Image 1 (cartoon, one colour):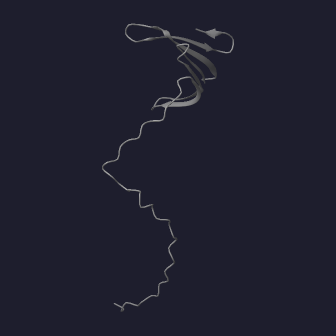
Image 2: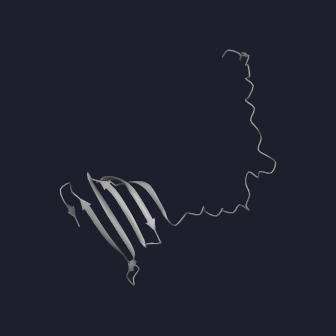
Length: 113
């Protein structure tokens, strides 16, 4: 077996990183979850939903209009080449807590209720 030979190595200077401020504790058992941000009760938002399993892949997109003042949540969506609209009427809730939902699906020629 041949004797070991020393190979010169040149070290590159490490990039300088700004250290964490001294007031920052990297880990603390006293950590407390901050309160979630407040959400305005009246809002409209866009959504994309992808449901899937071994037999299907279902992608839909739409808008949600939330109006506690009118006790209505309206969801307008598009899937399977058909637009649809759901209206949840919170003015009509059963004793079990179920909310009245009226859904309309448009199939290109007439609405399907």
